[in-house]
Every structure is written in C-alpha cells, then in structure tokens.
Image 1 (tube, rainbow, N blue to C red):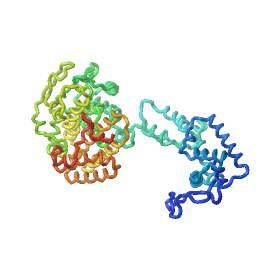
Image 2: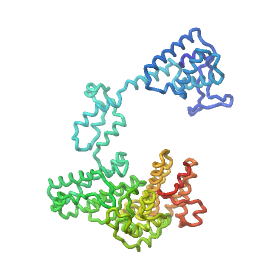
Image 3: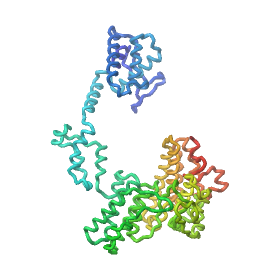
Length: 563
C-alpha cells in the first residue's frame, strides 16, 4: 500500500523533519513535522486496477488468517492506509484535505523508519527481519539444552552453569536442527540459574530468591544440617536431616485458640533420635552464626516486608539449636483472631522497650513504653471456642490503642488490634536487633539505605493501579507495614542522619505525580513532625494536616479518597 500511495506523490518523497538529536521536530515555517511532496495528486493509468487487486488479495488472506487482529485496529497505520486506499479506488474526490495530510504523515513515518520500498535501506531491513523470523525459537533451543540438564544428578544442584549455558555445539546442531554456536537466550539462562547450588546470599544477589517466602523454602536445606550436627552417627545424622527437611515442606496452618501444629520434636521417631544427640558447642555456635546471617540477609534484602511465618519457623529452629530463648512472634490472621495473645507477644513488646523508648518510633506511634514494661503477664484462656472469656492485659492495651472493643469476629476490628500488637512488638525487629546485636553488624549507611528502599517501595507500590477493593485494602496494609519497618530503621539512627533522610524523602516525593504527592504528603508530614518530637495527636499536628499511616481502619482509609 505504501508503494501505491508513493506513486501518487507530486514532488519529493515525504519524510519527517529531524533535529540534531534525531527526533521529529517542527519549524516556524511549517506546523507539520513532514517535508516533501503531497500524495493523491495524480494516479497512473493502471493504478486503480492494481489497488483493487491488492485489496482483494488482502480480503482473501484475511478470511483465511484471522488470529492476528493488529491489522484491523483503527489506530494502526496499516489499517488507516487500507481504508484510504479503498476510498481512492471507489472515489478519490471523497478525500478531504485533512485525509491527504494524514496519508502524507503516515508515508513520511514509513519512509523515515524503513526507507522507500525497494530502497537499499528497506532491503537491508527486510533481510534482517527474514533472518530473525528464520532463527530458532526458544522452544527449539530449550529442547537442545534439556539433555545437558538430564545428564546431571536430579537431586543435586549445579555448582557450575557454564556447561549448561554454553552455545549450541556441532553435535547438538545436527541432532536438534539448531545452528551451530547459537547462544542461549537470557530468559533460558535465568531458568537454568534456578538449579544453581550456591550460598543463599549469592542466590539473593542474582535475583533467584526474591522474597522472604522464597528464602524460607530454601533455608531448611541449611537448617537441617545444623540441627543434625550434634548427632554423632553419620547415617542417623543424614536420616534426621532428611526428616527435618521433609517436615518443613508441609503446609503451614493457622489454628484457633492459639493452638499449634504438631512440632517436629513431638514426633516419636524424632524423640528417639534425640537421645543420641550430644551437647555440641560447635553446633550451637554454628546455629547462632547462621541465625544472625539469615536474619541480616532477610532484613537487608527485603527491608520493606515483615518476616513471613515460614521463615520464622526456621529462625526458631536455629535459635533452639543455639540455645537462645527468643520471643519470636508469628503474623496473626485477622479472620481467626480470638482476642488474645500468648505470653511471648508481651515479652517481645518488653524487649522493644529497652531499644525504642524515647526514640522516633515511640513518638510517631504514641507509645508509652513504661506502661508496657509494668504490664503483668496474664495466661490466656485455654477453653476451646472461648469468645474472650478471659483476656490478657496486652490484648486489652492493643484494643485500647486501636479504639475498638475486644471479643468480636469482625476482621477489620481484629486487624486493627493485631496491627497495634505489631507496632508494640515491632513484629520481631526489636527482638532480633537486641538479641543478635544486628545494629552493630549494620553500618549507619546500611540502615539509611534500608529506610530509603522502604520509602521507595511504599511510593511505588501505592501507585500501582488496583481495581478490586479488597486488593486495594491489602495494598494499604502492606505499605503501612513497610512504613513501620522504615521508621524502626530510622529510630536506630542519630538525629543528623534522620534529618538528612527526611530531606531526601521530601525530594523523592516531589518527583512523584502530583495526585500521589497530594494524597500521600500527610504521611510524610507526620513523620517530619515526629522527628521534631511532636506527637501526632497534638493540635499542631492536626493543623499541619499530618496523618499517622496505619494499615487497618473500620472507616474509609484516608489514602483511598481518590477512588
């Protein structure tokens, strides 16, 4: 079609004007970025017959090949030209001036990008496209490299990926009809990398472990060996490691009344094996070191996410081997919350007191840590299906802070109570930082970087378009959790570093779209005021329009005012 229309051009072939950077531009003399002649000015003698033949051939081919709909789209140049071509065949005088100008622009775009039909530029482009179309598909290359993987032990990882991702050899080319020296495409190389056997931090760095949940799936391979290290008999040690790894692959369930699933120590055959375990100082030190390394890896790699329950299981196992009594708390589900917390939640909150009392974290969330420290521990009721027949003081404090009543089954109400528990306990951050001295292992700049990544993630995630209402609520909850972790990291920094971070955060927020800036600015305002030791429930904070960013709410969340 382009060739037919170029035959009707009077003057030079149309093309786009270019500025020195190569972009299309406009001049003061012309309001159009096109230079050259105008189409539809004269038609050769046999032009109408050839155009009709081309249209008839298109209709026949279109009737047979209907999968691709791109050619039918009105916004595509090919579809527009075909419509104009039919009008030229039927009645050229029906074209208005704007129609001719549109045809001229389409021709100019085509010629500028590909060159005129049958020109050296166009022939070179078509030859390159033919080569691309004739190249082997990913499926062909995958079938060629599949035997390489099949030759490796199926139950072991790969320590060297070189032999698997090397270009296609001559023997493979003859057998699989793939050209010799065909490189393995990057997407296939990335799939092969999932077989890599390497240190966990290397797998995270390569992007093969992308979340705490994925880290929890691969961690039992390491934990199993550490838990079995105290068993002297080699065969029994291998058996215990295999049992442990298999046990950790089971599905995790959340039970009512704070009940737990069967623990591995409760299995009778594991209890029998434990009799052969010796008190091994090396195993305890190894477990403690691994616990520190895994905790640091998870927090540094995914600072915006709370540690998932599956990963917490492995941390507890390592802590038990290291003979450390850590009050590690699980994430509680709002739909089965019974209005009570076990004793370890209050223990975790009291450990947070020594670390965070008087800090930015306490000011922002309005926490009276002295009240938490003096709180008595109450053993929760064990009555099955008890709807809050007894309550501990910690759960009552969380409900009071949330402004709701305990004892209901409303998920939103329960979620508000659970979020206050997470605020008071820091959801394991304070316990790990205090007991494992993670702040000493992390430099000030690393904590700043972790806080920045949290802020960037919150801004990015908040702007993801989500249509479903429930998904929007989950989006708010997850970003509020990331916001809380960011404030925890900032609370461990000196005031000059916090001030510098807030200056960066203001600049980063201003770079976002105006609608998001106006919507999210109250959250940052609240954080700035808290850094100046101003409580967010004060009159000054309310007059400044500050908001405390929480994830759960019974009323419409203030971040959802745009929907």
